[in-house]
Image 1 (cartoon, rainbow, N blue to C red):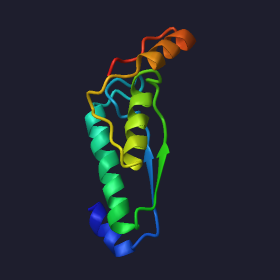
Image 2: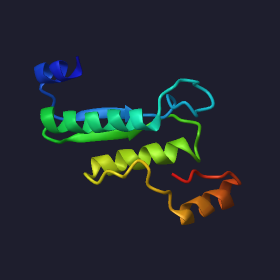
Image 3: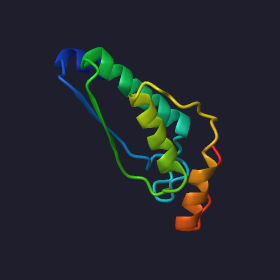
Image 4: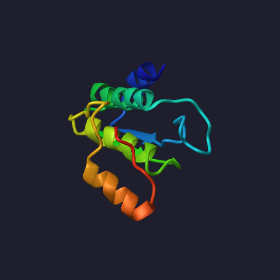
Length: 112
């Protein structure tokens, strides 16, 4: 549906919102979306922007309450996709960042 709408609309740019409330680890929403599914949507939005809007894409963050686990990983993938430098899904989270998160929040950050 979306590609046909974009083709008919001929947008000058694409604005998308990428909250993480939908992730299965989000403590409020209780939906069942994985990080891989979120990455697939991010990548699809990137491709749509290049196909229909000359690559002009404003990707916005949004809600999400798993702030030491889901939010940073999802937004890292979003930023990497937008920069044409996707991150391997199983890449390890840098230990320095994990230590900083623990020092500031007393919560364990993910390993991947």
